[in-house]
Length: 124
Image 1 (cartoon, rainbow, N blue to C red):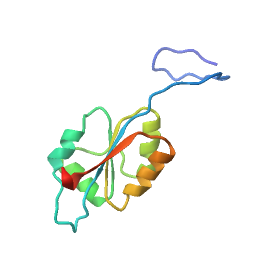
Image 2 (cartoon, helix red, strand yellow):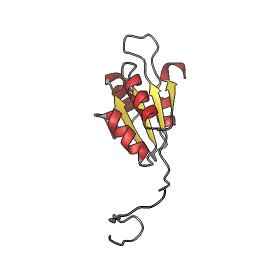
Image 3 (tube, rainbow, N blue to C red):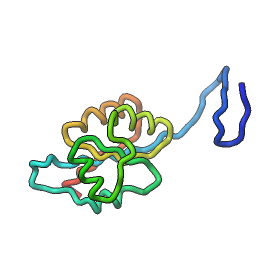
Image 4 (tube, rainbow, N blue to C red):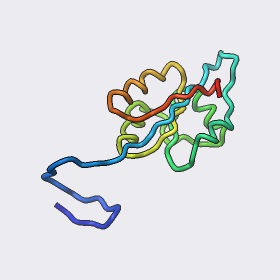
């Protein structure tokens, strides 16, 4: 429909065949509840954040840990949908999540074939 240079938005119609694209990768870091005795190390969060992808948090514990690491999260609300949509479009994401929200995210990732791994901040 329209032409453009690399990186420009263009309109297209009448696709035939398969369009190949790479999805992003989500590294999920589960943080302990504030009542748990094991505290997560903010330095580990800084190590996991490459600086290239986005950082998302869900829950008070996750937000506190990420900001103590000196990082401002890119996504704080609507993370189930926001992280999934970003990953489907090829964006790598570090998702720091409280334990009560973990299954909501991983279920959605499995349903949409988003590659991800889950790490436990208390164990690292």
